[in-house]
Length: 159
Image (cartoon, rainbow, N blue to C red; front, top):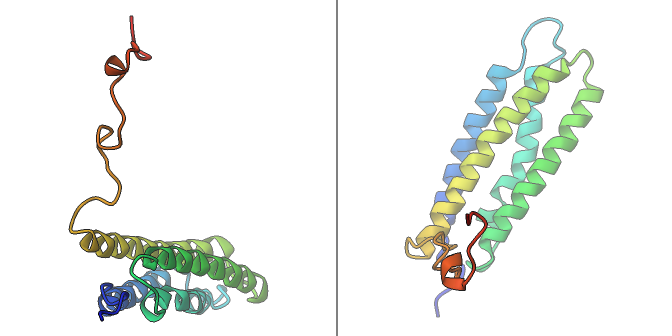
């Protein structure tokens, strides 16, 4: 019998998230201020992103059915953002002379890279599972909605 979770390409997802996390760490390193009076902003930004990125790999590591995998991706994304906000808030209070605005920009830019990559991978993987068909019908007629003229009403823009 085939494993119900085998339809999800976990290795491909993990590889894509590893690359996205590396890009996010590099972006945070570039954006965080450097200098004598920055209180280790670069190191703090990279450390906070690295700690929060642990949650990024949950969808690749957890053994869940393919039908629930999208929920695991959403849950891990929320957990990562909460960890990022918590660790970032803690770092901004603990690290002396940390310039808060550049530190926050570095964190959010890095987190944004991972979020976009994670969302794109989830869409590609889930769309591949559905045979390339959109998961939600985009055509109102496909959803059972009819034009107002067919329902007997004139519609909101009737003269």
